[in-house]
Length: 318
Image (cartoon, rainbow, N blue to C red; front, side):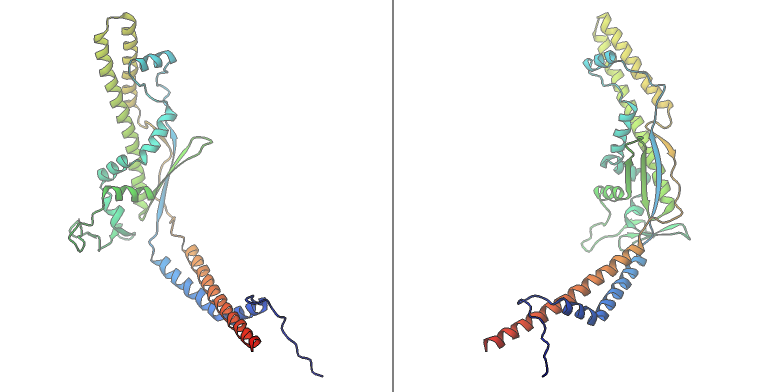
C-alpha cells in the first residue's frame, strides 16, 4: 500500500523556513547580479571622487613665564575700578579655540587670504601642474569670475556658505589629559591643506595678540582718566599699579611670537590621501545590493505563500 507523505500543515500566513531557504537558493543569481551591480556602481562612484588630504598640527597653550602675577587684592581693586585684567594662559587658549571656529574670524580669514574660489569652486587638484581644477558650471578661471544662474544671479557663495564649508574641513580637538590641542584641515590639495593651516595658526595668534593689546590700551586710557579725577593717595597708588600691569601686558604681547598657541608639531603637506575610503564605499554598495536582493526574494516568498493559503481556503470552502 502506497504511503503519501504530506508537508506538515502550517498556520495560515506563516512561511516555511525550508521554502524560504529554497527560494534563496533559487534566487542566487538574482543575489549575485544585484551585489555585483551595486558594487560596480559603487566602484565607479568612488573612482570619480577626488582625493582629499589632511594636514595636522599639535599645539600647546603658550606659557608666558615673564607675565606678571596678579594678586587677589589687585585683581579685586581692578574690578572695582571697572578694569578686567588679562586672563590666564589656559583660559586664553580656550577662548582662542572658540574664536578659531567663530563666523567673524573665519569670514575675515577667508577674505584676507582670498581662498573663497578654491574652497567653493574647486573640483579637484592637478598634482602634475600644481593647479586647481574648477567646476566650469560655477566659476570661470579664464575670466576670474563667478558665473550667473538662469535668472542672472551670481553664483558667488555668501559669507555663511564660505564659513560653513571651511568649518566642514576644519577639526579642533583637545586632549583633556595633557591639554594638547590638535588642529586638522582637509583639502583637495596637499599643499593647500598645509598652507591654509599655517595661515590659520598665525592668524589666530595675531588676532588674540591684537585683541589683548587693544583691551590693555583701552584700560590704560581709562585708568589715566580716573587717575586725573581722584586726589586720594591710596587710589592713585592703585591706579599706578594697574597702569603698570596693563603696560607690561602690552610689552609682553608685542615681544612674544607664539602668543596663545605654541606649535609643538607644525603642519606638513600630507603625502598620503585621507579620503575618500573607496574600499568602504564599494563594500557598503555590495551590502546594499544584498539587502535589495533579500527584500525581493522575501517578497516573492510572501506573495507565493499568500496565494497558496488563499487557494487552500477556497478548496476548504468547496
